[in-house]
Length: 438
Image (cartoon, rainbow, N blue to C red; front, side, top):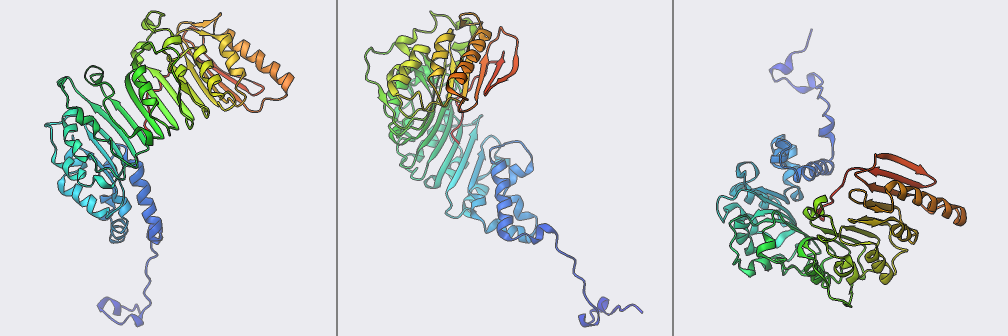
């Protein structure tokens, strides 16, 4: 007869209790569960519209089960990534929620992302809440319209921990030409700042502000920014004594002084120079539109003995490249060379490439069959011949060289490979833009 004593509160000794096995997720150690939570938070932090987890993490973890809540609330790092979408406060934060995130993060360093594309006024109460913890900011990613930038200036002299800054500022159509110059000093004092990505979402800064932001230039090891002209870019380059990676874009090309003393950048390993995209459209590519590289290229004004990656997008010709590499004595260190110019003399480029024994990536771009003489196919043939000749005289190449050529007039060659030389011809032009530093 079946023992039913347990149904009426009988002694457990009268029958053996069978407890169900816990699920695999319940058997995970707390530190493993916390690491899973962390991966979710990090992977969704930079995305705005990929589902409810991205909007609610890590709060959602505290609502699933008691054990999950204990782990989430006991892991302050989960709450240290603060994303404020000020256009959708109900989804991405309110004053109480923002305060709660900061309380649960304890004293952890903060990664802050602030986004506002449609400000309703020149102040925002949630912005005040997050700025009250500016001393803990280590990484700040700010995408903001100009009216709110006035409010942001209250963090000046409070950024003692900030190491990485990414800021995109939209000035808008109604900006006053008499902008307070002090606004641009918001990030001037940041003793730990080493990486900056600063751009503008429109071109109004070109009319109202000449490279407005002031940063502690001598500290920076990575910089990505936009400038009005090559002369302004040069003035900043002279201050970057510790720079390792530099990506600069400028709008106007001005004649530089002759016999100028080069700016020495002893630690620079990666350099990208680019003229604004609108000047690189085919209708603007001519000798009268883009000034002579012999008098305007920044490469004539630099010395970069440690350079490993060089990319010039309509900002230099072959002579300017040779001038930089010879002056810096860095032919042997260069590994990546990207060269775009309105008119390219292929034999000159081949001479440059032949002097780079460690080169592994070569990208050549041009417009309307601007390679001289002949075409990109002629360049491929000449490069292959030189490569094979070097193999016969010097032995096998030390490494594979990958070559990509942009040519709108030549049928695409998806891939050609021979003896360590891989060549691709494409009709599609890639504009790199200025990427974030993190």
